[in-house]
Length: 133
Image (cartoon, rainbow, N blue to C red):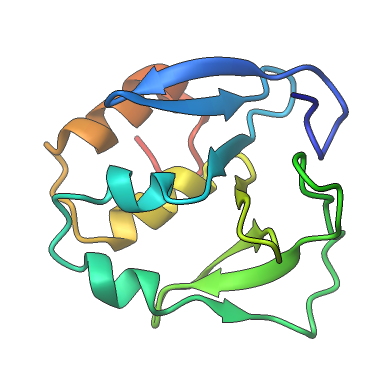
C-alpha cells in the first residue's frame, strides 16, 4: 500500500494481533475499518469515543485520498473535549492517522498508561509521538 500523505510504500506492523499499515517516511498509520474498535477493546470510554466522531467541513488541512478506494477522505474530529483531527474514508474502508494521532486517540479512550496498546505504541514509535513520552 502507498502512503496517502507522501506516496512511499508502507510496511505492515502487528499491534495486539492487528495489522496496521505504517509509513516509515512520514510516520503515519492506516487502520482498516473496525481495527480501531479492536485496539480500544479494553477502553472504558470506547463507546463514547467512537460516537464522538464529527466531520469538520471547515478544515483547511489537505484532504488525503483513501488508499483503498482513492476517494478524498473526510476530516473528522475525535473526542468531545480534547479533540484530535484525523481522516476517515467516506466508504468506511478505514482511518488515517498522521504522526502521533493514533496514540492521542487511543489515549482519549481512557486507557491507563500501563495498557498494552499504549505501551506498544510508545515502544514502536519511541519518542516520535506527539502526545507520548
